[in-house]
Image (cartoon, rainbow, N blue to C red; front, side):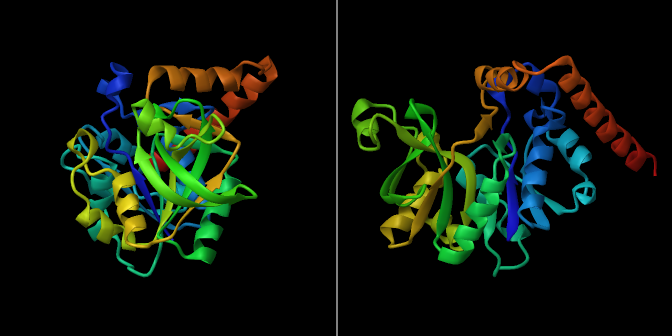
Length: 280
């Protein structure tokens, strides 16, 4: 399996800090968000990844380099214009040298804990061989996320019948409501490379962009199988100041001074390792 990390977004809602640094270099705990993404791939046994970058992402490229610090062979693709997540993934198509390998897509500003759920996602995809296997989480407000309609939900897994990107009206939302909750796609996906065929046929959708959810929906209409896996852990999505600061608060609110010192020591060790690598 090959990892894809879309990281081309400008982080407009996190300005002014993202005018200076990519949001993927913001810290959560003692590591940058992009480090969490690379470690997640590594824990899944993934040895090769492509990071999709864009404007002002030079510091991110300088930080990751070739990925050797994380035992992953990292390549980079460039999204020339902000035309949606589906378009970003299409930008990586020519960078993938092995057409037989499936893809794990993990957004560069998303952190999932515990990370072992990602291995379960990968193993399920490998066993079932669908077009896509999506990680899901229950949310109260579906207007910010891609959401799904499920069938035969059992032991936290189910077959996805329909996907929709950020339903806004009550009529749109009601179609996806399950006992007052909604199943949101959390930004982690496993795909067959058939997804590229569907992306290339996907017309411009919401915000005049190529939406990944529209490509998945097109696959469903073509008879493809799509699976959803629900998880109850921590989902950090750094899309806006509120979600980022609330995630930091949730992590730190019960920490002791000793806990903070241990975290600082871990940060020191990471900095020492990076400084050593840069001096060689």
